[in-house]
Length: 399
Image (cartoon, rainbow, N blue to C red; front, side, top):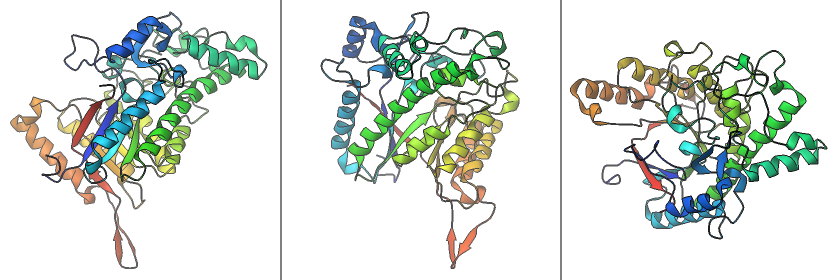
């Protein structure tokens, strides 16, 4: 159908649980054969300091271990990518132009520091989050790293004084601005290890995807989460617990975009529709978080895919998407940009909403909306690459 109507498909390979539970109409748990292994060995699940297990995604601590009936998680992901490539080979490059690789909970490269259902309700979740480093595989890695630098005591679990259920970092000894352990030698050691493990996981997936889809004409992509509720603090605690070592003193997104650039992968991020003035928390900044991600992507010349975070069809929300998109696609740089409108529902087709949406599509499809000026070289007119992708295929990665 996409080929018949001249549309392109962005396929999303999902290696994570979808939905908040059996009551959720979008509920798709991990496959039963994976959950059975998790039941046998609970440490395959991400675990916080309270020993609460999260089964949204297999812990990256066991990426290379043969814990799935003789296969490692990376082998399972690789096998599925190859199967997808072989099944849809005739469409790759022409119709299926991009394959987004699931990299963690919600398909995003992050730890499940907060349950995904909370992250999907912007303005509600402002918890600091919990470090997910207490399964035995993550603990073994942390202990080995501590021993390597001669600080064995630093490998005995995650940091104290975090209390992720709180919303104010100043009430914790680890995240507070003045004298917080996040900026101590131990804090820097732990955060470099924790974020480094996430980067390594993303690199492994990019390496596999690059090898599988090489020569098909398909662009590979990965998604980064917009954790914005403590952006205007020194320590950015909710970003730290999610695995993004981004603070007042350190750019945590540049290492991620540099890793994506090594594999010529596109970066996907959300929150194009959110405005700072609508926030419930004065320390939050969805616009600031998005700008920093965009700058890091632009420094690495990455293709950027934007998404909305909420199902809103009012003029304010749609106009914010246009404004946010201009930040990346405007000017005369060679960086490419596309926007994927997600979470469509039947209200889209109500008369007033449909009129707003068709106007929005025209704005997003018109390069003049984004280019304040054109650059002419040798009589040629150069435009930023701008596209809108409307067809998304979701593939359930274990079936």
